[in-house]
Length: 435
Ligand code: NDP
Ligand code: HSE
Image (cartoon, rainbow, N blue to C red; front, side, top):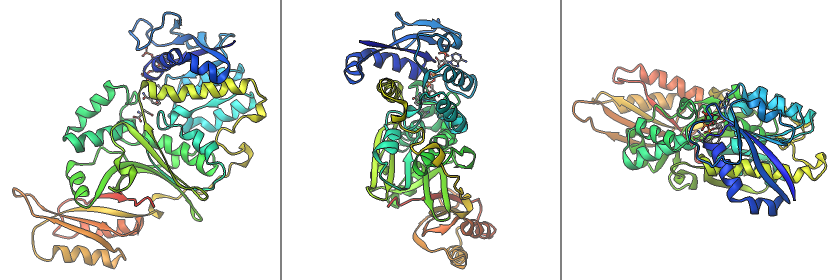
């Protein structure tokens, strides 16, 4: 049987999980590829550290060049994360004619255009299934399974750590910092957990999904990004009273005006399947113009779940190695000379419904003043809740608006926040019906 030698850059959560799954499922992988896939070398910063995998038959090194310059290694798995040295190492492996698999969404979102071009120039594959939504085969679904469709929009819970934190806060009333610590211990969080909490990791993934959906170059700097750090248990409770769940959602939509790319906390009706995606699980809804809405669900982070996606790419490469290069699937699913530069809409031009929570002085006429400002700005109200002040605090007015242009909402809020009866800046969270 043909032996395919694989080298790992990084032997942490994903690298360790990958070694374990390659060993555990060696027979299945051989039955699918006709190849025996073996990890021969792996690099880490400190090779004396205990690992989650058995490394008895893997040569360990602290020098990544030992892996990429090994002439016997045909496929390099970049599972170290970060910008550099990962980028230079990938380019060097590609220039030596090696195929590369990466789980590094930050790198693909920021440098994918350059990296894919280098892979095409050298006639090798740069695969990245594990970079988005952990174990869910969403890249394959979008590049291949949905290739008959024009994609209209997609929306996803695409950060496992963030969803885990929101779920634990809601179900157990746990404190934000405690749940984040647990997510780190479980290997879900990024090296810098701010990436998870402030939405940067989800923005990396959304940028890649938008390019896969609409056939445009990667454009990370244009993704509007808000994280989950400002969500309070109070808003989670009020949203539930109104029949909604708060989820951290990435949304990409194409219209005649341009492309929306945005990541932010969002109220979703509790009856939608995606509103019930909890814990570390991720889900992506993709609406194609032929198939309609489709939903992809699975674990968004974790050692073996992510390894599943890494190894699926290795299997694809093993299969391709026995075929001609022109049979391979383009990196973003569209021929590279067919990628289109599309206008990305600024957040002020986006239309969504809104959840608003206003902290107000408990006196007559407040509600009337607020609704007058909203009406003057052409904003309709869908639902209202009013909560009496507790222990000397302010009364709370919670409003659900109809769809409104972001810039109109911002001017209305400016007026509302200048009213004498309003004590604090409004809390505002976008609402998506996802239909
Ligand atoms: P870890 O921190 O667990 O592992 C990183 C590994 O890379 C470690 O073994 C580390 O060595 C090694 N490493 C880092 N920098 C260097 C360097 N300069 N030279 C040599 N070795 C280095 O990270 P994860 O496994 O969690 O993540 C890896 C990648 O996968 C990231 O891009 C991440 O975004 C992505 N990802 C992670 C998922 C997850 O669930 N964790 C899911 C999907 C994608 P040492 O062990 O000695 O510190
Ligand atoms: N930190 C990421 C998450 C890992 O929690 O989703 C998977 O990409």
